[in-house]
Image (tube, rainbow over all chains, first blue to last red; front, side, top):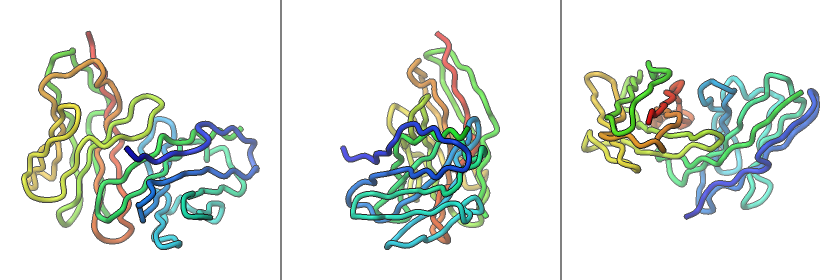
Length: 113
Length: 114
């Protein structure tokens, strides 16, 4: 069964460093999302991406964040200068149609020291 | 904007007992409703979804949920809980306008006693 994959599973970085989180959505999906979950809190929407551009973004997704689909398979989230409060689990999700269920990856745990 | 409330932060049930997890949503029209489960250190797995039609929906692992428009609720149920059901359960709402992102509730952590 096709699934969303994410790498790395755990990333540790120093405050101020840039990180790139990678996702491979399900191959025939068209809509892509990033969510984050700070430890013990709810899952929060960051950004949605369709047709090679951002569809929507939340208030969390400020200028420090960017997304890219550099090729036909990868979908990346970049944080330019990480802050302590960026420590969270980051989930990638994809779906073929909207509205529909979103398929989530296993997440990348980002720890900012 | 839509919102989701899961009033129970933590629930403990005995193995074999029945389970009901509550979810209330706020949205002006009929939303698209989902229940996801998250085991420790894992991603989110879809249990079931409601888009339209029959208000009682069946999902995986023996779960079901009932959409009640009058109560703005979408409660998750299981007649007999297994130890492997211990996890965190998230209710989520999606809409067909705007960003089409999902809005999640704060989750209910289920503990199963032997």
